[in-house]
Amino acid sequence: MRPVTAFAEWPHIIGHIDMDAFYVSVEIRRRPELRGQPVIVAGTGSRSVVTTASYEARRFGVGSAMPAARARRLCPQGVFLAPDFAYYREASRQVMSMVRATVETVEVVGLDEAYLDLTGLADPPATMRRLVAEIERTAGLGCSIGIGPSKLVAKVASDAEKPRGFVVLSREQACQRFGASPCGLVPGIGPKTVERLRALRVDTLAALAAVPAAALAARFGPRLAAELQRRARFEDDSPVTEERKVISESREVTFDEDIRDPERLEAILAQLVDRLCDGLRAQRRRGRTVGIKVRLDDFSTHTRARTLAEAVASADRVGPVALELLRRFEPRGRSACWGCGSPASSPPTGPTTSSFSWFSSEVSARTGA
Ligand code: DCP
Ligand code: MG
Image 1 (cartoon, helix red, strand yellow):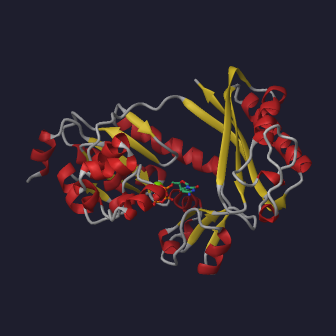
Image 2: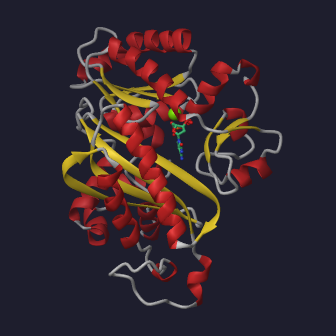
Image 3: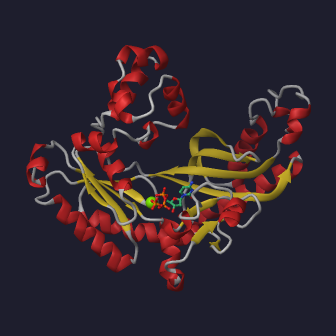
């Protein structure tokens, strides 16, 4: 079937763009001598994790979210760089402005990816190839493209042949191509669901698509069961929507050693609040939702947030909210270590608590347009 014929049958044509090894590619752009090397962008503390690994580094088994210490063991010859988020945001803006200049409806879903509504274009692949070439030429960055009749197909297609992938698939072709893949390949089917599916001997997308609906519903409930099967069949009719103009501004710090002392934690939180509010005021922005993010020494990340009646930008207003969120925060079964008088705190639970400590916290304010 010629692609042109296939497109004519699709009510929607959606593109998905995802930058290849984004942070690393942006670093290599300003340090071209690093091209071809195993480059890893990771924090510098002993607890930090890998944000991005170049494809050369991935050959050593290094990947996103891995503790940096492990990455150093796997790839001792790697070039480790500390993240420079301001520079990555700038690169993202540059890329997304080219994307927006190319098609009318764009949904940016992160620093390095976006959905594009290509419906109605005369030749969607040609348009996307031009965009790829322009990004490569002007921004010096590589990306992968997926094109399909839905966001779901486009997203999975863009990931299928990274880096520099360019994959066009109909829904049926996606089912065929990924039928033998694990269910977790599809966005929205996370590790926990994958485990529960495995217990039902459902290991692949084809198996999930074919399993009797009643058996699935008995385990997951009718709504989730139906949604899982829709995803396994690559059925998706969600529209490409211009992203809501909600911007989140945050400051975060990772501790090099565990900090258990509530007073020290609260002092650090106060510093983060000050830095956050300075930044907000400098940009003349305010936030209505104040949040904290806490990462524990088992790398689990926890967030708590509260939305206020009005937008605020001063430390006087943000600070108490962040502090209360922190004081109330109790990771399940581990509250005893956090003895700062939270009204809901439970009694110490014995020796297990000694293995637990905090080492990272973040405070953020979500600002709306
Ligand atoms: N990122 C992060 N921590 C993660 C995953 C990603 O900080 N656990 C950041 C760094 C990435 C960027 O987000 O560069 C984009 O994430 P992707 O999952 O798209 O990963 P990459 O762009 O790095 O690689 P690729 O898309 O080529 O697989
Ligand atoms: Mg990417």
